[in-house]
Amino acid sequence: MDEHSLLASFESTIGRHERIEPRDWMPEGYRKTVVRQVAQHAHSEIIGMQPEGQWIGRAPSLRRKAILLAKVQDEAGHGLYLYSACETLGVSRAELTEMLIEGRQKYSSIFNYPALSYADVGTIGWLVDGAAICNQVPLCRTSYGPYGRSMIRICKEESFHQRQGFELLATMMRGTDEQRAMVQESVDRFWWPALMMFGPPDDDSPNTAQSMAWGIKRNTNDDLRQRMVDMTVPQAAVLGVTLPDPDLKWNEERQSYDFGAPDWDEFKAVISGNGPCNTQRIAHRRRAHEDGAWVREAALAFARRSNEESHE
Amino acid sequence: MSEAVSGEWPLYEVFVRGKRGLNHVHVGSLHAADDEMAIRHARDVYTRRNEGVSIWVVRSSDVTASSPDEKDPLFAPSGDKVYRHPTFYEIPDNVPHM
Image (cartoon, rainbow over all chains, first blue to last red; front, side, top):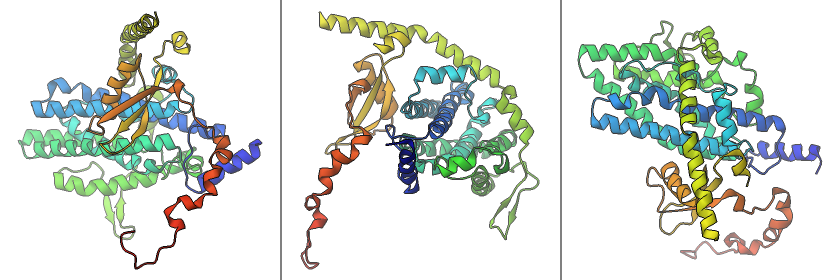
């Protein structure tokens, strides 16, 4: 088949809302876009272990410690599902890790903010995982098969993450004035960065149109951001916290909340490497990778020797 | 072996039997130095919530697959044997349990 009929068959598969699978022919641009998006998503899960991971040893009870440990382990698992989806497109795990630690591929801007108080563990679960769910549920129907299947597994597990966060905050809100203040301070710090997780506004998002035409993305950044705001406002009311946006109000006509614009200059600074923790996050990941090199080599050497012995 | 050059652990495909009575189903892949480690990793990565009662792992390089280009000739014989499908047979509405 020539390139023209291959493209026609690819586009008719997309048009029927069927999935593209690893061994199918696909345009180079499609492959690159999926690799970029899935890799960025995988890196986010892996880097995302860091802000909360540092609270495991300081969790206030055995129950909270066990929950947090399970949650951080899930993030690692999510990263591994996504790396394996990405590798079906012919990129190796080693290359992906290298591109992350050399700064050639990005991860979500949110993980460049520090988790300063224990309440942040709850806020990250409630708002950050809440935003992730908004983003990920439609991705279960993304056009690239392995990516969609990873997203289905991830979404099943993500709901626990959000609920444990909300429950943690609700428990603190029933505590002392000091605890309530700690929750409010945490929500104030995370609200805008959580809304930035959906990416730049639609009129400044050059890749969105093509990604939607290919069925890789299912909704625009602004649509998802609106969905997040509409879901979160009533939850905040139940929790008894305020959201730090003076423009936030119900719009009867649109049957949706109006809200202010995040600080896009801050967003650009964070994704281009100048957020509060960018250097620290990558340095930590690089150290873990380099410190693990001897384990990877030793396991390979052991496997090779066992293999030789069994053939003698 | 290519992994000896790159130093990367080989890739394994993972299949999980969800419960007794079901087939093993492909769930994804992972890297491991050998078969035993692949099973351990598969347990941690793919069955953290009782998703399975049995795991198979197989080196990805040992999987032989039909190529998508062969789709038509390879699967065509099933296309003209519609009598293999139950809907081929017309059964009156008043016949129960069929």
